[in-house]
Image (cartoon, rainbow, N blue to C red; front, top):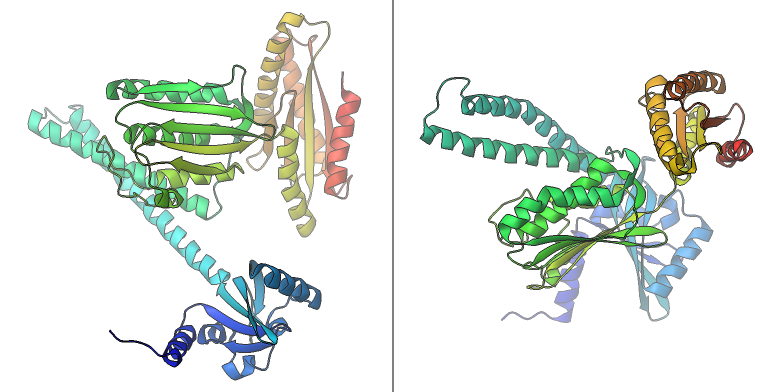
Length: 495
C-alpha cells in the first residue's frame, strides 16, 4: 500500500485546490488576498499576481469597512459563515455569488478561507434548462392529444369493429399515453415553479370540505386495497386563503403515495390548527422510509428504490410538485418516517387575512410603480347586512351577497392583470396601472351593476355595499399611506 509523506499530502492538497472548479481565496483579517486559485482568477478576469496585490473589498462593490468588520466577527465567532454577495470582475461586470468563509487560526494570525460560485451563471444555465423542458413538453402535448383521440375513436368503434385482442392492446396503449401525459404536465409544472412563473389563484376556502372531497375520490380505491381511509378534523370549518386546485393536488399526491406504499392498515388525513398556521398531516401504516433517505424524498425524479405495494411507477415528480406548491403558499413541508412503521408527510399553511394578502400584493405593485413612475389604485368594497334583516338569515344573505359582488367585479370591471380577493365581509381589488379617475369610473360601473343584482333578488333594502379607494401617486405617496386611506374610509363607512 502506497503511503504519503506529510509533504506529499500538502502538495496534493494544493494541487486539488489549484484545479478545483470552485473559486477559492485565502485572506488575512484585513481582507488582503494571500492566495487565489485558477477558478477565482477565471471568474474575476485577473491574473493570480494581480489578485495577490488586492484585497477582497477591491473586487466587491458592496463590501464597506463596516460590513467587513461585521463579516470577520461572524466568521471568527462561528468558524464558518455563508451568504450571498456581489463581486466585480476586471472588466467591471458585477455578478452575484454564493460565498462561504471559514476561519482558520494560525500562530499569531487569523486566516480566512473563502469559496464562491457565480450564481448568475448558474441561474442562466437553470433558465436554459427550464426553457428546454418547457419547450419539449409543449411540443409533445399536441401529438400526444392527437394520438389519444385516435386511439379513443378506435376503442369507441367509430372507425369500425375492433377484435378483442387488438382492443386489449389499445387499452394498454391508452393507459401509456395517459401516463406520459401526466409526466409531461408534471414537467411543465416543475419547470414553471423553478422559473418563478407559477402563480396562485387565492380564494377563501373551507379546508375541511376540500379534504372530504379528496377522501371521497380515493374511497373506492382504498376499499379495494383493504385499507381504511379516515380523517381527523376540527369540528368547525377551517377557513383560509389558498389555491383550491393546487392544494387539492398536494393532498391527492400525498394520499395517492400513501395508498401506493401501504399493503395493510390505514391512511389518515389530519389537521391541527395553530395561532399562525394550519398543520396538515397525511400519515400511513406502510413500508416507511429510511432515515438517510428522508432528505431526498422531495428531490425531482427521486424514487428511493422503494417498491410500491401496488407495483405502480410514478414520474418521481409528485413530491417535488407538492413542495413547490406548499412553498408558493409560503408554507413548509417535511417527512417523518421509520422503516416498517409507516410515514407521515406534514405541511403547514399560513393563516392570513384578506387584508394581509392584499397588503402583500400591493407592496410589490407599489414598488414597481414607484420605480417606473406608474400608478396603482386599491379598492375596498365592503358588504354589510343591515339590522332590519332577519337575524336567522343574516349569514346566508352575507354569503350570497359576497359571492354575487365577487362575480360582479369580475364581469364589470376587472382585467386579467387585476388582483381580486374576497374576505369575510369585503372584496379587495388591486388595479395596477390605473389612475384615481379611471378607477372611480370602474367602481361606479361595478356598484351600478351590483345594485341591479340586489334589486332583482329583492335584497336592496337588506344589503349595503360601501367602498373606499386609494390611489398612488395621485392621493398617497407610500405603502403606509395607501393602506391607511383604504382602512380609514372603511371604518367611517362601517354600519
